[in-house]
Structure formats: structure tokens, C-alpha cells
Length: 196
Image (tube, rainbow, N blue to C red; front, side, top):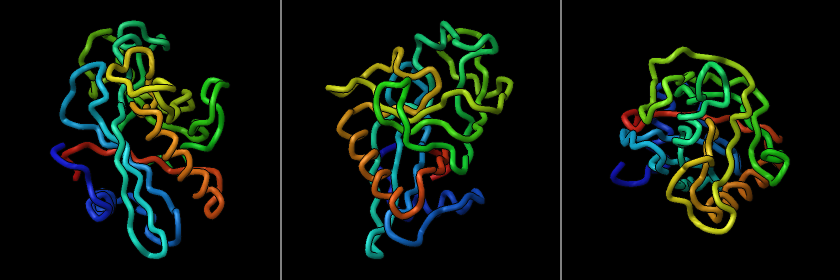
């Protein structure tokens, strides 16, 4: 992706795919993962965008992230059926604020999600693998607590993970503010770069 998406681009992309886009009220967050065409394994080569309005003015922030698991978990699947790779789509109320692995505040899975089960233990994302639906602990969290991470490694076994802790802190602050108006659950939409 050459440049970060704007509010209107995300809105158009989601509506074109038949997904909901929250465009009314203050801090009605749209959490949108963007899986890029760069499929280099073990890198934060994807994005997580958050788009919202405040006093009618559109805002959009985009953070470096990964939407697919690190190489560690691709080679050592935690599930006998294969490593989880979230299938692009919209997942209403997927996350709520909670503790990631009981350690720190993050967005934790509360609704079902579809994942590909990549079970050949290589570096290639298999998006033609069997699809599994359910509650698998697919959270949204950060990598290292103190500095930006450049390799995914063990940080993701299927979770959507932000590379920089300051970006993650900002995202969580926005979610906290949004929860005051819209409740504790958050819809997540995963699209591909070509959808923009």
C-alpha cells in the first residue's frame, strides 16, 4: 500500500462489499484490518485502521499491524487442524475490552470468527485451506510493550497485532471513549488491499 487510506476510502470499500460502516455519532468506531498484497512471512506488513467521526468531522488513523500469524506458530500450529488465519469479512461485535492472556487490557474475542486452518507448516499463507468458525481467542493486541516490533514471531498465532505499543495505547483509548457511547463490543472488518 503506497499511502494510508482515508476515511472516505474505507467507507466506500466497506459499503461496496455490503458491510456496515458506522458513520453517525461521535466515536462510533470502524475497526478495519487491511491485509496487503505483500505476503512476506513474519512481518508487520498489514494495517489496522480506525475511522470515526467527532463533531461531524471524519478522522482516520492507520497503524502497522499483522493480520496473519507469525512464523513460529505457522511451523508449530497450536491447533491440530492448523494455524488460524482470519478470513476476510465483517464480524459484528467480535471483540470487547478484556485481558489478553490475563495480562493486559486488549480487545478480546467474544463472538465467532472464520479462520483458514493452514496446516502445512510453511511460510506461505494458505487462503484456500479449510475454514473453521468459532471462538479461538482471536484477539487484537500489541506486540512488545516497550518498543516497536519488526518480526511477528510468537506475537500472533492468529490474533490481529499492532507493531507499536504507542499505537496500541491510542487504539485502546479510542475504544474506551467509544464504549461510553456505543457499548463494550466492537465490530471488526478485515479487507484486502485490493478492496480499497
